[in-house]
Image (cartoon, rainbow, N blue to C red; front, side):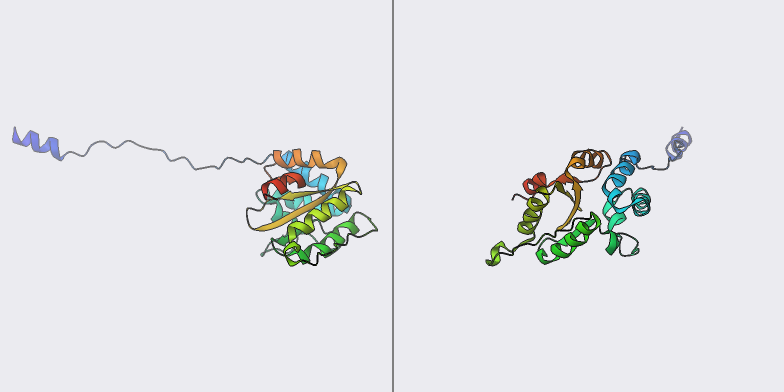
Length: 190
């Protein structure tokens, strides 16, 4: 009887055989929407540059900013003669002017935006400059759209007003954190 009890207590319970499945992350990016978005916001750069940046967008589907701007390991993003995205630190108001100039040149807009920098230091901010640029663009049939990187920097595209709603729709479908300028100001509590 003790032997049975000892054998019973000493036995190793049968282990369930578990077949491990490899984790496959769910891709939330609609690649067709991403491709259409990239083509829409780059078409003014010409067919070759639009195609190059669209291919980059599809290979960097999880980070449109890295695709368009390039990243630390890769300097094959936007080029000076085809500047696409304003990219600034939240306090770098003095970096907007030259990038806007490059972007307007790609759209064959001869007139350049000039920010009449306020004399009062507290009004010299990237937010004030972006608001001024958005007003100036609006009067010329263009719109400023913002992409949130999740950091404390600002990224903005210039698109034709006629394309803004479609760019926003496609960007959202492609899982890009894109906003109109009005929504950006609300998100920034400005």
